Length: 240
Ligand code: SF4
Image (tube, rainbow, N blue to C red):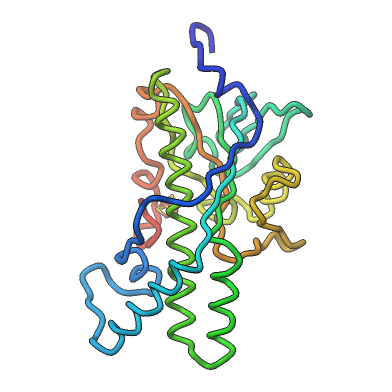
């Protein structure tokens, strides 16, 4: 990192929290989570049900996120080491592809909250499967929206230093084992915005997302391009 000086916030490893999201619900994302093709329009009775339960689910959602920015101690093709006040924490996976060019990594946990899970569960148990699916899809969209708010906040703060973010990289996706959740959650202690991890590494509330976001000089991050552009999974519906 010779010759590079970053703002003090990037060198501050304390967790930060984001409460709520300003972005309105993305209907197209909800439809995508429900399995609709990009150009499809739901039939009228489904449309009415969608409107009603999207509104209800947004009312229930409590999107929140926390993140910690940590310096990169080592970055190899299949391993990244992050410097914490307690020592080095390592993550494996296709980190060389996703985090290339990163000098810092923001570990994050984002959730749409437990109420939305509860509503989807209650609907499912009372035989309202479609309604439950709509609520669950809104929960997934709200968790994604607050993850996006983390990205926006990081980019706003990093821009004056000529830095920018990579795409988020999450345990359980694109070659990172789900078990990496354990190390990620350990970085946060009790500051997990109410998200807990089971011994099987499943998050509760279910509509939660966690991962790593790289921060590095804008020119280097742009030169690396988007990890999805270099991926061979041509039918991946998570492609960004
Ligand atoms: S295309 Fe899909 S599998 Fe490939 S890197 Fe992107 S999200 Fe991951």
